[in-house]
Length: 314
Image (cartoon, rainbow, N blue to C red; front, side, top):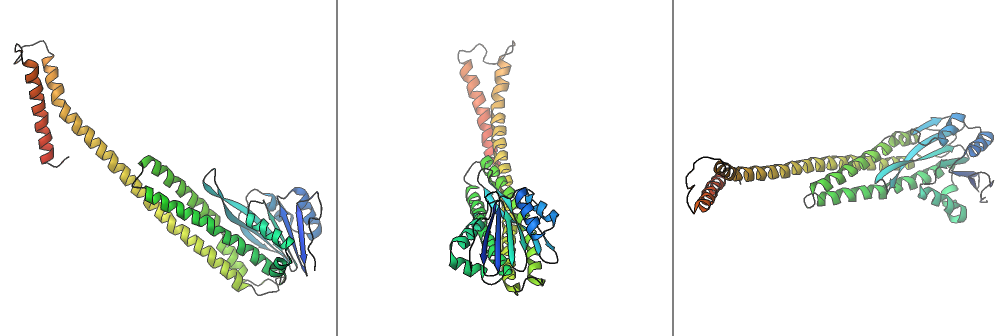
């Protein structure tokens, strides 16, 4: 048994061989890497092109001697504050597994490095079959989804706590960002259960080991993630509706106070306007005319204010 490092300095292909199982890991694939795989493994050229695509739809294709899978896993973009899909493509045959990815999924790179450097890790992951190795990889990647999910949950709960204590404008923006993040995460996860279900229920002749229990366990985890996202999607929509209601209520309160203020000031404006006219008016010649006018306007405004209080409008 042996473990072998990178085969060619011109290629981004690293290889580990343990027993009869070979794991080829292609990080940041190039056309040269795909040419090497086409020449040595006779993979379908369209599948190799899919490996070079920025984002290909998740799928599983069955051929005579191998399976080709495309799966997406979430990576949180701190700058954009949104979960983005990271693509992993895999070719699996009877005695080999080829993984192709961009290198953004650190858990996959770490697993390969562990198997490359640690004999115990190779024995644990590669001693049984290529199908079991695929299960171990997918299990790690699905487990990696939960910290991203927990971050989403924590952000939603924090937004819920801030909803009644911070300005509505800031809260609306935060809820909108969370809503976009959950929608992006759901788009990533939604196609995966069908692919995992196919691995669980179908029998492939070049996968020698019965792995339905293992892939069923992964499928359960993905379903749990999907259900949690659906639940928190409803929570965010509820927060958005609550935020809209609070914003409308605060706007109505402001409009009410402005209307009352304008109504109270209106008598002052009317009286001052009348006394600005060039006509004879009461108290015009009195020394105390200004004081009388002020008292009259204050009396009228005070009476209106008392009436509003009596009607419980304020």
